[in-house]
Image 1: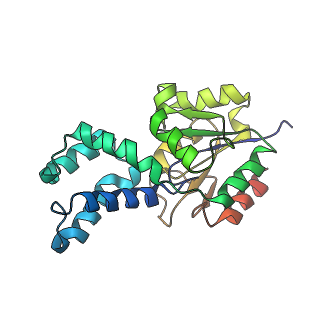
Image 2: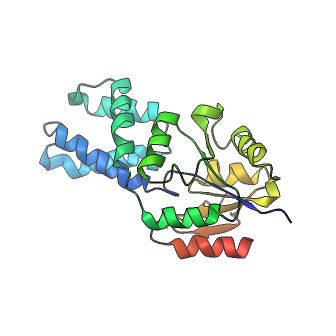
Length: 227
């Protein structure tokens, strides 16, 4: 049998996007202390995280809501997005264990990133995470012209590696975009749950792990069982 292949989502799968967003919010509070007074700061920060939806909410909708809720920022939605796009990717931290593990996977089988997002933002995150050289095969919605869960972005990656869907495992944290999007094409799936319950209305993923950073043995065990 030909070698099996693995596709990885990026945000909150291979990299800690939630941590980078927390650091971005902290920087926003530090730069605009009058907008986030101490008495309401915790409530405001919690609201920002809720509205962000772990990055699952469209950026235009997020920036519109934030600038309306905090007019004191003096930013338009486009200006807030530019601030996020230029700052947040640089707040991603490298995890040496993840880099080493992904490199070991890539030595044994085709591996690619399949991620929503712009080239500017996502490729900067890859570089900051130390994964740019480890994962040169990258399929981004901003470059492909299609966003997960659309079939076209998965099909572009499949065509590039020359593997049929049944030989590929897609790993990601979004039940609909990652798991359902890949499963509709016949890929095996691994959901990165971050402790969340699986939506009962959806068919379950092939595998589930809680997270990848700090829990390399769990995802390594999935690949061992699957292959």
